[in-house]
Length: 234
Image (cartoon, rainbow, N blue to C red; front, top):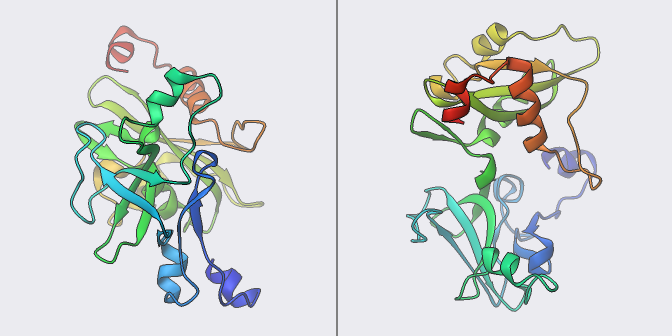
């Protein structure tokens, strides 16, 4: 976004957040927001809509700055999936709140930041880990063109982290040890990937979304995590 502003001379470019089910925009940055707000957040709630951040387990609103599931309510929220009342009830509750499945934080001024997806969250030894934070740090490595972080079964901690990495052309292949060295002192020890898998690309859906479920399935085979101990803790 900063390059778009500086190199494409789009000084008033804004970021929107939403989904098809919300018609589709729920939050947006404003043209008069400072650059950091317009490049590092997804803005504030749109007029005539509501948003809240809740604990996925309890449904209670979390404190400002704490991560939780982003929910939105208002005229933009769909009536439901066509002829799918059960699936509709899974995402739209009795209060007409749309549960997006996205993890977000909200600051004191109401600006939102998306930190990950609930289904992508990794629980390692009781610690909730959001892969996006690790991915964004690894993107700063000069030899990494793209990266996705997933959780894989682990007998001791329940889950461990694995990074799938696409190297830049001509770059030397990264090992798990070199990735750990790059992360040391910049990420908490439990957020450093234990496994590294270098690939040419990621499995994708027909609409261009990365299939982390398929990546996890492949990882189990790649790492030989088929023992009873691993499966029991998966």
